Length: 105
Image 1 (cartoon, helix red, strand yellow):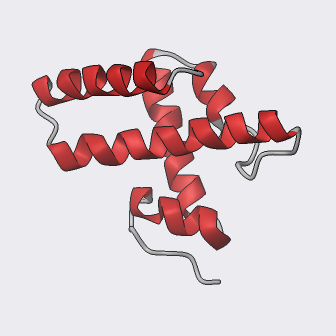
Image 2 (cartoon, rainbow, N blue to C red):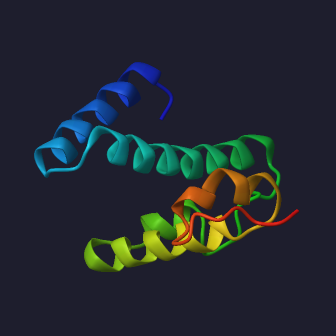
């Protein structure tokens, strides 16, 4: 998405939906942050023509390929697996892993 204003507007619309579904502010901001990170990693790798730091199958395109319950399960497993990675990727996504334990470097 090339229009930052449209992106921000779309995100806040989703926040309203999540809030209405009973999620706390912290919960939905955390989830949106994880999603934005995956989306930005995909866009950066495409713009630079370099491989993504996100493993294939746990990346943004893998989320786009799913829908409904399958998407929810895949997203949860994606965050759990990425949270176990070493380096900056694991550090950023460790709070999403079931234990919340950061990987050893």
